[in-house]
Image 1: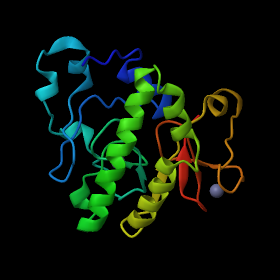
Image 2: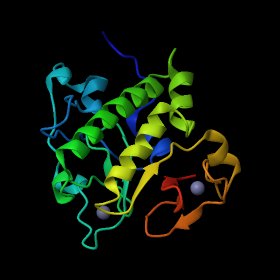
Image 3: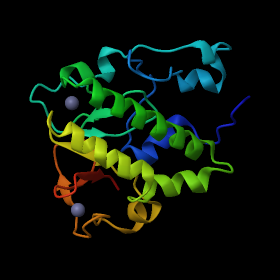
Length: 204
Ligand SMILES: [Zn+2]
Ligand SMILES: [Zn+2]
């Protein structure tokens, strides 16, 4: 089966993940699925579905001061990213229990599936966008539960998929849970807004 992707991965990441260029995917031993490089998915390698990619150093956070982290699928097997540099935080640096590791892997698989439905831009697109944008969707409710599990490692936010309306019309987003204005997180290289009561982060 060939999936006809109408948007490119870089366009998708620009729209939803603050301009990150996440082109290679990590594979971790606990991941329930393998990953392929989407560039190859788009036609450069006839065996793309058989490939998986190790993470490389320039895709892994090397911040030395242990910044806060965020739960963000970004089409990858590892949903833990650094709030400052936007790169992967290796799970072994967080000392995760097997329970938390499994919860992370399960959530990443679901989030990635929904991201692909969004990226496919066909019959499931509206469904996928609703799941991503509605803070009460199962995706986001379970994401908040995983964020709670991760709080014992570092401060952790759930990356809230920014709505089209928020990006275009609202310079200062409102928290979708407590309805208070979100505050600017200034240590990232692109605009990030957070609610420190509900551990939500987003961009616009
Ligand atoms: Zn970092
Ligand atoms: Zn809030």
